[in-house]
Length: 285
Image (cartoon, rainbow, N blue to C red; front, side):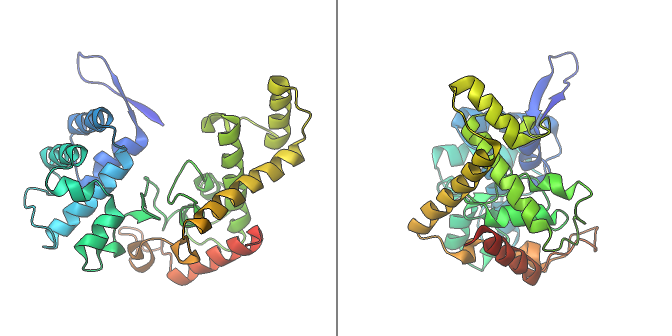
C-alpha cells in the first residue's frame, strides 16, 4: 500500500501505509519528514516499522502514566521517536527492553499495562481499528502469528456489503475463514496478495496457474483443501509450542473502551468470545 510523498523540488519518495500509520499518528508525529527518517532508520537497523511504532507508542503511554522514567519519550516528538528507534536497534538503555516488543515490555513494567499493549500473541497490531472492523477483529484474534493483516483479509469483508462492520454476527465467521484460507494458499503459491481481487474463481484459476508452471494435474477443490490444511498445520505448530485458546483474543482496551468519536463502534469481550468460539467450531477444532 505505497504512497508517493512529494518534497518540494526534490524527488518524490515512496512510503507504505502501515509505516506511515505506525511512525506517524500512532506515536503522535505529524511531520512527514520525521516519519520518513524513522522509516529509513528502521530499514537501516533491520527493524519492522509496525512493531517499532506500536512498541514505542506503548512506552510513551507508560511514561505518561509514570510507569517508565524516560521523560524525553513523549507523544508527538519526532526526535524522541528517532532516538527510541536507534536505542532499540542498538539495545541501549530503555531500548534493550523495548527491543523485546510491547508484550514482553508490558510483562516487565507491570501495572497491568498489558491491557493496552497493542499486540496479539506478541505481534504488534497494524493500522486497522478492530472496533469498527469487527470481522478483521476476529482475524486478528485467531491469527496463528497474531494480529497480521497479511494472513487475514477480513477487512475486505468489513468494507463490503456482506456484513455490518460495527455489528457483526456469527455469519461473519465463515467470511473470515475464507480470507484466511485464501491468504494461506496465496503465500504457498508465492502470489502477491494485491492480486486477490483479480480472480473470478480463485481456487480454479490457481489450479490452472499451477498446472502451467509445474504440470501438476490438480483441481480447485484440492487446492481449497490444501489451504485449510496449511491453516491447521500452523495451529498444530502453535499447540506444540504451548499455545492455548486464551491467546485468541485482543487487548483489553479494544474490548472495554468505546472508540473515541464513534460511540457506535463497540466490541465487547462477550461478542469477540462468541466469534472465536464459532470460528473454532467451523474449523473443527
